[in-house]
Image (tube, rainbow, N blue to C red; front, top):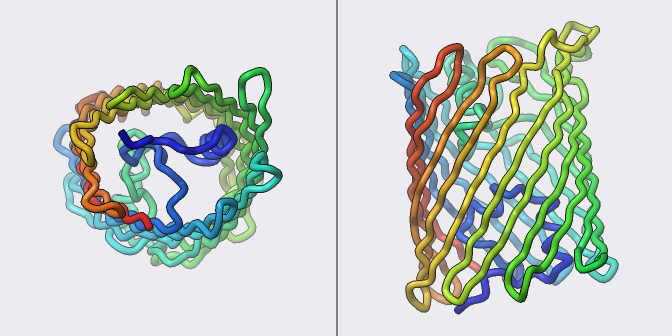
Length: 373
């Protein structure tokens, strides 16, 4: 059986702290970082219906990774997306997304990781009214669209994580800074919007359980700066606290990943120049669970099963809550020593509170290739 994960213990805590659980689990397994060159092209189709309203997206993301050596890695990614909605009238939102460049460098006997990145504004941002109406739907967290935003400003990011073995655990501490750039959000209005910068602090831990199993968790706290229109402050997102736990179980012919994440956000601040806390908290609690299993049925083929649950509470205004469950299956097959085909399909049902409860039905289909050299 192929070993699913060949990170050493310090590398695991680095990537758990720096990469979201959803990003890791979007692939069929926790993947190796030992291939020098990787290309991933996963075509994704998502469809959601809320009573009579509908929204769908066809996304084609493309990612290139290059491992210069065991310590230095570079990645560049982009996407095109074609989205439309029908909420009484039909509307479309199509185009290229921004290009994302990132890298990481490991040093200090693999106990430190420095990361850097830039969001290059190659995507569509100045939206008309029709496009903006679709973008508002794509931004709903519970729908989890693959490409919720096409274009923003020039963003620059950097981060540092350190890890240290202690009493059978590996403990990690990380900090990151995101410098957000201004952009024009509306096609027919002559003003720029400058999102607030972000600072994130993470504390995590990683423990081996037996020879093959692992348990990992981390706590994150994000502080948001004030958004501005030209030089006038208009909005400041409430600071966010998140906790994530992940378990990895490996058997002779199978592996299972279990992920639990909760996000809690404080009150936003709003105003025109002089920001003040909103009267009640418009942010609800967001709890998500995901189970992903892979079972080897041949030398080069894995079957996979997926189960998801999202439990979002109403905010203080008694709206925004959601209860969604999803189930799916798929397979991963090695076409050659360097090319894998990965495919899955997922079905969702649930409810969303938009002032009244509406029934949600969803479909997600992903297929594509991973090339590793």
